[in-house]
Amino acid sequence: MKAQEFAIFGLFLSLGAAAFGATKHDYIVTGSKPDHLFVVDPAKRTIASEFKIPGANDFVGTIVPSPGGRIAYVLVNKMESIAGIDLTTGKEVFRADLSTPGERVKCIFAFDVTPDGKELIVYELPVKLGLSEYKVEDTRFAVFDTRAGLHAEPVREFPAPRRVHTILARKDGKSFFAIGFDLYEYDIATGKRLGMRGIRHWDYPGHSIPDLLAFWPVSEPTGIFASPVYSTVKPPSGHGAPVAKTALMTLDLATGKLAFHDFETTSALIFSAVMSPTKPEAFGVYSQLSKIDTGNYTLARRVDLAHTYYAVLVSTDGKEVYTAGAMCDIGIFDAETLAEKGDVRLTGCTDQSITSPRLIRR
Image 1 (cartoon, rainbow, N blue to C red):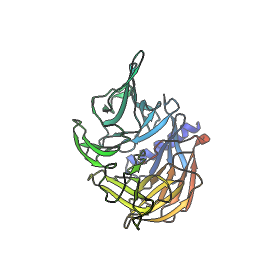
Image 2: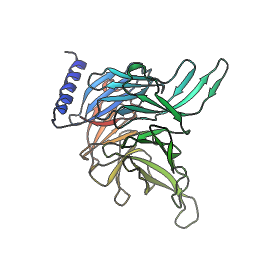
Image 3: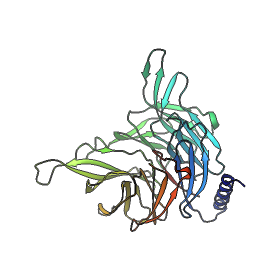
């Protein structure tokens, strides 16, 4: 039996056991250049399965798992296609090629699957391709039926604001959030905008216009999306240079509650964050791994890392933190002490780059 066949057989057994009521386990799904998709078992510190994504065209971006974790929807082909890969067989079961001969369409990271798994909501930036000129068209949301197979086309479209970089479906399945300069909410069925709240135009007394880089759409296992946000405040004396502050932005996908809390005078860069499912704390990562006490919003602990990581995940029992993205390994750390416990290196040391690793439970 070949190595890949053995890996698939092992994943069949583990996922099949879960289907029959056995204990469920955490798996990490990540991708790497030029066309790789991995399922990693963090408990065993091993790669459970490895697949190649057809037509990836040397690009693997945002990953969105289906409810239940059976399918991974992956942004590929220079941000012009979304491939749905069955995580048991490795087969491509869904494909939405966004561009057409007369129109080039990019999705800049932002798409999500509805809680019932039936539709994908995709943020599109279209450009009309003329004989002698390109015409930038209005941005839009496109909705796809996930059962449409390998030649999916939008079932409906509606207008979208510019500068959206994250889409997050609300837990009730009726609406979705679009994060950009501000936070927008839209009705999934009609495309009607239900509301807008400030991010860039926030109401946070004493703070400057903020900045954030919320490209990693991780909300598991808590159902709360988190991201670091940077701004400045006046110095305590009221005179002199502004003081940089780092805040944690949280968005509860069940209630829609949006909150901002400063937790430190900026001393380290954090790219992404994740909430603990068991304690009042969050974790953030870049060149350091940081733990934030969300009970009183202070920095609880910080450790240096061997290299930068773009993405951070936390186990469903809250005991381990996983760092991923940027290079070719996944770091495993103790959530209490931030001590390193292990490391999983991807086959061939292929670069994860800007992909968004996700945690599934099967």
